[in-house]
Structures are given as C-alpha cells and as structure tokens.
Image 1 (cartoon, rainbow, N blue to C red):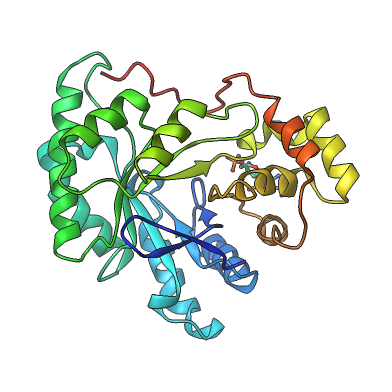
Image 2: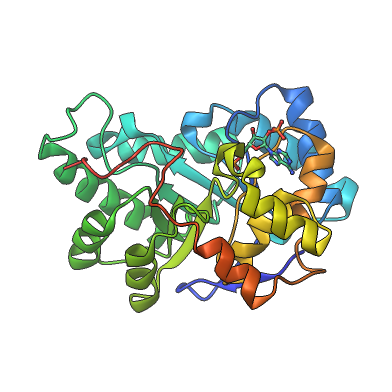
Length: 285
Ligand code: A2P
C-alpha cells in the first residue's frame, strides 16, 4: 500500500502511515515497526510528546536493511511539542532530529496551536505560533525538514498562518472520521493546496462498534477498522492508524484491494455530528 499523495513541496507522502502515539518500549516498537514494514507501510508518524523518537529511530535504522529498504524509501513525520512553542522551537527541532538519529525529517508539524503553560485565551499563544513557524521555515530552507505543516489547527489558526507565512504549510493533520467530517477545514485546505491528513480515523476505537460501520463492514466482508480507513483514503485523505498489535497493523494496511460503494460512502459521511474523541483546539487564542 505504498500509494501516495503529492504535497505542495512536490514530494510524495504515502497515504497510509503508522501512528505511534502510545507505542512505547524498544521491544514493542521493534515488533510493531517490523510488522508495519512487512505489511508495506513506508510512513511513520511520531512526535516529541510521544516520547518514543529515540526508539522509533533505532527501530528504523535496524529494520530497514532487513526489509531491503533505505532511508529514502520511507517517510518520517515528527512534531513540535506544545511546551517548545516560541523561542524554544529551534532547539526542539534539532532535538527531534537528534533523537530520531536522522539527517532530515520528511515532515515536521506544529503539534498543537497552543503553548503548554499558557492559558488557552492568552494572545501569546498566537505570537508563539508565529515564532515557531519561522523556526520551522528555517529548518525547511536548510533542508533538514523536507516539508513543514501543522496539526490540530482550526480554520482560524490556519487562516492566520496562511496570511503571514513565507513557506506555506504542506499538511494539516487533524482528527477526522465519519462523526467529524471537518467540512470547512477540508474546503480551506483544498483551496490553499494544504494536504488534509487524518488522525484517529477509528475515533480512538469508539467507532468500531458503531452499528452503521458494522453494517458496511458486513456488507463488504471487511473489518470495521478497514472500512473507516478506506472511507478516508477513498476520498484521497491520508490516514495514520495506530496499533500496538502486529496483526491489527497488518489489517489496517490492507485498504487498496477493495472499494466502498457510493452508497456506503454516503452512509458513513451521513454519521457526521461534529463529534470529537480527542482534544478540542477550538478555544486556543
Ligand atoms: P491496539 O493498539 O490494541 O490495536 P485511533 O487510530 O482512531 O486513535 O484508534 C486507535 C485505537 O484503536 C487503539 O486503541 C488500537 O488498539 C485500536 N485499534 C487499532 N487498529 C484496530 C483494529 N484493526 N481493530 C481493532 N482495534 C484497533
């Protein structure tokens, strides 16, 4: 499943990436990354706040040769921790590179519009975002970050960035699933050539027992997880399924040997309730 989308930088990003939030411990990480590479994953998504950059980097260095792959064959994403927004950003960017043990990172995102330690309504959040973005632009221009982007930004945060940036964001990574279809954000991304990328496509697992999802799954002989992930990629939206279980990692990667009918797609999209299972960034100033 190495299918990919083209970013506004001209480089390709694989449509399916392994989400690694909560993936901890070198043994566990080696097993999971090994299963992912075997199943065809070529995209790995981590973050400073996941506290696993060191282990992810080590696992990739050790396992790529086993799978006949080199650094250039894979796509690695990491993110700026919310405590490192503002003047701390350059140091934090270099720390991610060092912890991963990589010369360059394919995509580096501002993880969250706010700064840890500030109240959400503090206008300094906005000033810090602007300062952080300038640091990301520097790492982009010297080639250490091949692409830069943002995560958990709302329409307001993204518009503010688009109006002030020198380098436009390549990606917006947000929560996206049939209960939260993010129409306004998707339209803005499409219009401004920002790749809209999904996390928590399974609604953190909660949507796997949704009767409508189960019905579609039964109808096409696939699992609920595959249906939810296929619903996104069939619309061209890249996904980042996370699992610490090798067989579920494999299952989540099998998305390109079936198709959902138009009716199934609409049935799922019709579940939208603007419902979030993850943190809500709306009130961050
Ligand atoms: P596990 O790590 O035990 O597989 P999301 O990506 O929406 O945040 O969901 C992640 C959650 O869904 C994790 O708790 C993960 O648990 C679970 N999960 C991931 N893939 C599957 C799957 N194919 N079937 C069932 N549960 C899954």
